Length: 425
Ligand code: PA5
Picture 1: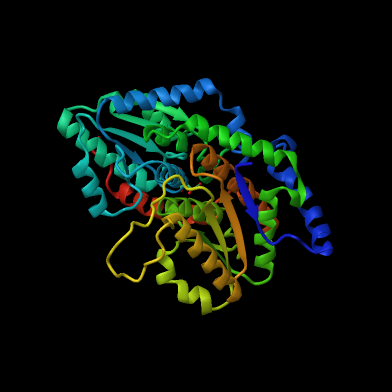
Picture 2 (picture 1 turned 135 degrees about the vertical axis):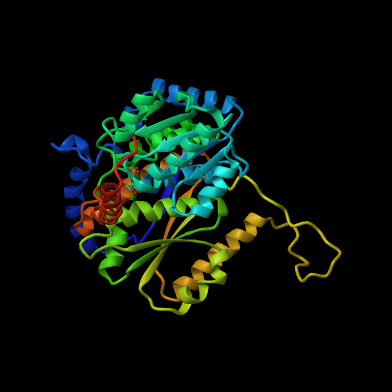
């Protein structure tokens, strides 16, 4: 097992009985083999369903694109952004030929991205499940415009898309001859990191996506073998639900590696958008320790006791730095022999002791190592836990009615303006 979960167990006998009944009933709800309508459940068996041949095609496409020698500008937002960004930040260095763009309506950001964009060799990868998200359609307009100005035309190979088979973006890709990848209709954006939405950008960044998927498959096998509270994804979901029922309103998802900060954002989107409904849901927020101990540490230690802490840590980090000897009197004499990982572990354990003594419940998820295999396992584990957790709360994990409200507001405003200004074409 690549991933380990340590939560509130051992549970008292009363809790165990209640939990087992509820969880066993919900396990069927998240497993598409038991559902007539598998809407939203496309992610569940996808790692097993994606054929190695299809994955080879994705990797071949990524290699071909990188061979052009330029950068790929990835336009996507929400579930079409966070997973890929998280995977790349966790596994790759900082100097990648990739620029994530279009995930805000900031002209400053877009102008800076466009200044880096060289249509002669760079590529644009547009990721939008619906193909209608305003931020993405708008930024694509500027990228097309830049290509047209520099090259005099938009060559089909300048742009690729990942979108639903029947989306307006797919229709555009077909009309203009762009390479298009589709994703299963039954898979929502925030549950799509293990589909081309996450795999393609990660392949562009050099992630071993075969190992990533193998990690997800292995995690699925592990989870499929045990039910009820013995299943660690269910146990994590149950613990969140218990803590929520006891008045905890927020989950602080804490990481100790800066390269995992984006994974915290992915987690926050996955759980926030899946659970925050009908006036219910834990507020998911992510923190980087020890950095944020120097800003929010005071609040965590002595503020209101209405949250709990879930820590993700790596048991055997690959890199390590030994404290160098020094003849300088800097107050650290005698610590030589310790490495930065040793010191990081001292900090994590000390922080957890302090927070526990301060009345903060602690949950822990650990990965043996930080590599593609373990990350694939983590992505899959969290998706399973999230679906179970939302159903325990009594909400549908797979819709996002709230996000759609704001999207609709923007769309209607833009439609009003369009109505007054008929297209010049
Ligand atoms: O998880 C979700 O469904 C959302 O966060 C979407 O991913 C986000 O709104 C972007 O939508 P789309 O991929 O359709 O552009």
